[in-house]
Image (cartoon, rainbow, N blue to C red; front, side, top):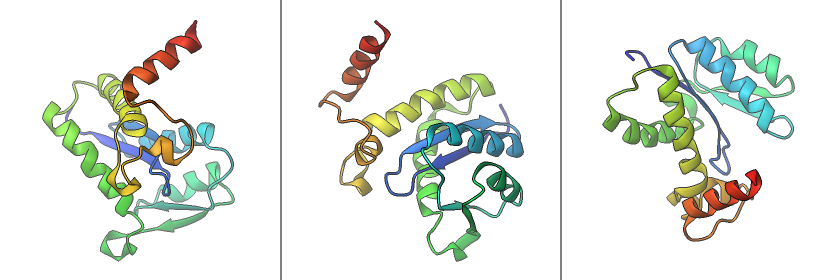
Length: 158
Protein backbone atom coordinates (compact mmCIF):
# COMPACT_ATOMS: atom_id res chain seq x y z
CA UNK A 1 0.00 0.00 0.00
CA UNK A 2 1.65 3.22 -1.13
CA UNK A 3 -0.07 5.92 0.91
CA UNK A 4 -0.84 5.19 4.55
CA UNK A 5 -2.64 7.71 6.70
CA UNK A 6 -3.31 6.99 10.33
CA UNK A 7 -6.03 8.84 12.19
CA UNK A 8 -6.01 8.58 15.95
CA UNK A 9 -7.58 9.84 19.15
CA UNK A 10 -5.58 9.58 22.34
CA UNK A 11 -6.49 10.62 25.89
CA UNK A 12 -4.08 13.31 27.04
CA UNK A 13 -3.89 12.26 30.73
CA UNK A 14 -3.74 8.48 30.49
CA UNK A 15 -2.36 8.27 26.93
CA UNK A 16 -5.02 5.63 26.31
CA UNK A 17 -5.40 5.13 22.57
CA UNK A 18 -9.15 5.48 22.00
CA UNK A 19 -9.16 5.03 18.24
CA UNK A 20 -6.66 4.20 15.53
CA UNK A 21 -7.72 4.00 11.88
CA UNK A 22 -5.69 3.29 8.76
CA UNK A 23 -6.92 4.61 5.43
CA UNK A 24 -5.73 5.99 2.12
CA UNK A 25 -7.87 9.13 2.33
CA UNK A 26 -7.39 11.69 5.07
CA UNK A 27 -11.00 12.86 5.37
CA UNK A 28 -12.35 9.32 5.66
CA UNK A 29 -9.74 8.50 8.28
CA UNK A 30 -10.45 11.47 10.47
CA UNK A 31 -14.21 11.24 10.15
CA UNK A 32 -14.20 7.59 11.15
CA UNK A 33 -11.88 8.34 14.04
CA UNK A 34 -14.24 10.88 15.59
CA UNK A 35 -17.28 8.63 15.09
CA UNK A 36 -15.40 5.64 16.51
CA UNK A 37 -14.28 7.63 19.55
CA UNK A 38 -17.77 8.92 20.38
CA UNK A 39 -18.91 5.30 20.84
CA UNK A 40 -16.28 4.51 23.47
CA UNK A 41 -15.80 7.71 25.44
CA UNK A 42 -18.18 8.66 28.23
CA UNK A 43 -19.24 12.27 28.00
CA UNK A 44 -17.82 14.95 25.78
CA UNK A 45 -14.23 16.17 25.79
CA UNK A 46 -13.79 19.78 26.88
CA UNK A 47 -11.00 20.49 24.39
CA UNK A 48 -9.99 18.69 21.20
CA UNK A 49 -6.41 19.33 20.07
CA UNK A 50 -5.68 18.80 16.38
CA UNK A 51 -3.11 19.68 13.79
CA UNK A 52 -3.84 22.35 11.18
CA UNK A 53 -6.09 20.25 8.92
CA UNK A 54 -9.14 22.41 8.07
CA UNK A 55 -11.56 19.46 7.84
CA UNK A 56 -11.44 18.90 11.60
CA UNK A 57 -13.63 21.91 12.40
CA UNK A 58 -16.78 20.43 10.87
CA UNK A 59 -16.14 16.94 12.24
CA UNK A 60 -15.59 18.22 15.77
CA UNK A 61 -18.81 20.26 15.63
CA UNK A 62 -20.73 17.16 14.44
CA UNK A 63 -19.29 14.77 17.01
CA UNK A 64 -18.34 16.97 19.99
CA UNK A 65 -20.60 20.04 19.75
CA UNK A 66 -19.65 21.39 23.20
CA UNK A 67 -15.88 20.96 22.80
CA UNK A 68 -13.41 23.74 22.16
CA UNK A 69 -11.31 23.07 19.06
CA UNK A 70 -7.66 24.01 19.65
CA UNK A 71 -5.62 23.79 16.46
CA UNK A 72 -1.95 23.35 17.21
CA UNK A 73 0.07 24.27 14.17
CA UNK A 74 3.70 23.24 13.79
CA UNK A 75 6.28 24.23 16.36
CA UNK A 76 4.04 27.04 17.64
CA UNK A 77 1.59 24.57 19.20
CA UNK A 78 3.18 24.97 22.68
CA UNK A 79 3.57 21.22 23.09
CA UNK A 80 -0.13 20.40 22.75
CA UNK A 81 0.48 17.87 19.99
CA UNK A 82 3.64 16.38 21.50
CA UNK A 83 1.77 13.36 22.88
CA UNK A 84 0.41 12.58 19.41
CA UNK A 85 3.80 13.15 17.77
CA UNK A 86 5.45 10.87 20.35
CA UNK A 87 2.80 8.25 19.68
CA UNK A 88 3.47 8.48 15.94
CA UNK A 89 7.17 7.83 16.65
CA UNK A 90 6.28 4.80 18.78
CA UNK A 91 3.97 3.44 16.08
CA UNK A 92 6.55 4.09 13.37
CA UNK A 93 9.11 2.00 15.29
CA UNK A 94 6.76 -0.96 14.96
CA UNK A 95 5.46 -0.47 11.44
CA UNK A 96 8.67 0.50 9.64
CA UNK A 97 10.06 -2.99 10.18
CA UNK A 98 6.99 -4.33 8.39
CA UNK A 99 7.77 -2.25 5.27
CA UNK A 100 4.23 -1.02 4.94
CA UNK A 101 0.96 -2.88 4.80
CA UNK A 102 -0.30 -4.97 1.88
CA UNK A 103 -3.80 -3.47 2.10
CA UNK A 104 -5.88 -1.23 4.34
CA UNK A 105 -7.70 -4.29 5.72
CA UNK A 106 -4.58 -6.23 6.73
CA UNK A 107 -2.95 -3.06 8.02
CA UNK A 108 -5.99 -2.27 10.18
CA UNK A 109 -5.97 -5.81 11.59
CA UNK A 110 -2.34 -5.41 12.62
CA UNK A 111 -3.00 -1.96 14.10
CA UNK A 112 -5.98 -3.29 16.09
CA UNK A 113 -3.73 -5.90 17.70
CA UNK A 114 -1.01 -3.36 18.31
CA UNK A 115 -3.56 -1.01 19.93
CA UNK A 116 -4.35 -3.72 22.51
CA UNK A 117 -0.63 -4.14 23.17
CA UNK A 118 -0.11 -0.38 23.50
CA UNK A 119 -3.08 0.18 25.85
CA UNK A 120 -2.93 -2.92 28.05
CA UNK A 121 0.52 -4.53 27.89
CA UNK A 122 3.26 -2.01 27.06
CA UNK A 123 4.46 0.06 30.04
CA UNK A 124 4.89 3.75 29.31
CA UNK A 125 7.81 5.51 30.97
CA UNK A 126 5.91 8.83 30.98
CA UNK A 127 3.24 7.06 33.04
CA UNK A 128 5.79 5.74 35.56
CA UNK A 129 5.90 2.34 33.82
CA UNK A 130 2.15 1.81 34.01
CA UNK A 131 0.03 1.06 30.98
CA UNK A 132 -2.51 3.59 29.68
CA UNK A 133 -5.31 1.21 30.76
CA UNK A 134 -3.96 1.15 34.33
CA UNK A 135 -3.69 4.95 34.47
CA UNK A 136 -7.22 5.29 33.07
CA UNK A 137 -8.44 2.94 35.81
CA UNK A 138 -9.86 0.44 33.33
CA UNK A 139 -8.15 -2.74 34.49
CA UNK A 140 -5.35 -4.04 36.69
CA UNK A 141 -3.70 -7.01 34.99
CA UNK A 142 -1.42 -9.64 36.48
CA UNK A 143 2.31 -9.70 35.75
CA UNK A 144 1.84 -11.66 32.50
CA UNK A 145 -0.52 -9.14 30.92
CA UNK A 146 -1.01 -10.98 27.61
CA UNK A 147 -1.99 -14.21 29.37
CA UNK A 148 -4.30 -12.37 31.75
CA UNK A 149 -6.05 -10.60 28.85
CA UNK A 150 -6.52 -13.89 26.99
CA UNK A 151 -7.87 -15.64 30.08
CA UNK A 152 -10.29 -12.79 30.75
CA UNK A 153 -11.45 -12.92 27.12
CA UNK A 154 -12.04 -16.66 27.33
CA UNK A 155 -14.09 -16.24 30.54
CA UNK A 156 -16.27 -13.60 28.88
CA UNK A 157 -16.89 -15.82 25.83
CA UNK A 158 -17.79 -18.98 27.81
